[in-house]
Image 1: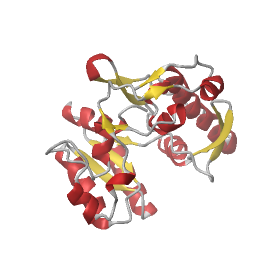
Image 2 (image 1 turned 180 degrees about the vertical axis):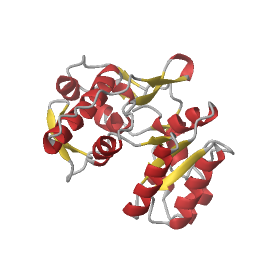
Image 3 (image 1 turned 90 degrees about the vertical axis):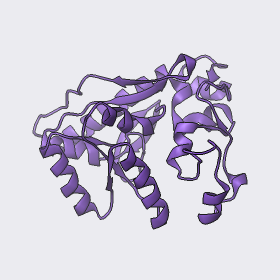
Image 4 (image 1 turned 120 degrees about the horizontal axis):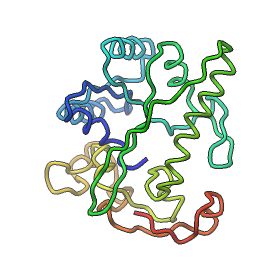
Length: 238
């Protein structure tokens, strides 16, 4: 939710050792470029595959009392069934299982954009995980807890849930923070989509959405979507 790619950067600036689990792009050159940008701001990349190597690196970071970031809203067909915004989805089981087996604290974090185009890192209290000893039930209960925490934030900031931007308004657009994450944006130059990198990765400029400031209104919540979310129609989406 929000400019989630800035969470690791903000924590690194404060002196925390930060790692982020990433499903790497197929193009190694692209993956290396994005890893390089993360490293420049102090965020260490843990590739999600090979899975065994990823687990070893995650466990090592946790043993050193370092932070490992997971993206929580990537619903999967092979995950744990949860109710989210009134619909059944499959939440990833990895973070839930890892927390249960390691005892690591699970702390929800969101980078929320406010007035004057400023980002605020909101850090919620540690989740109180269910630990009854019944592994399947604990897994389902804790996945539901993760989902409920995300849903609460989406309902508070429906205009800032990245995955919903187009669904909310029917308009395509993204802010600079998310554009930077693609590796196709002139982050350190002209703050525009880069023809050079688009040509290198064989991406057409016409495929890419307009890049707007975080305080730019791109549209309003459509009536049908508002009814699903339980919010008023016409809420401006930035």
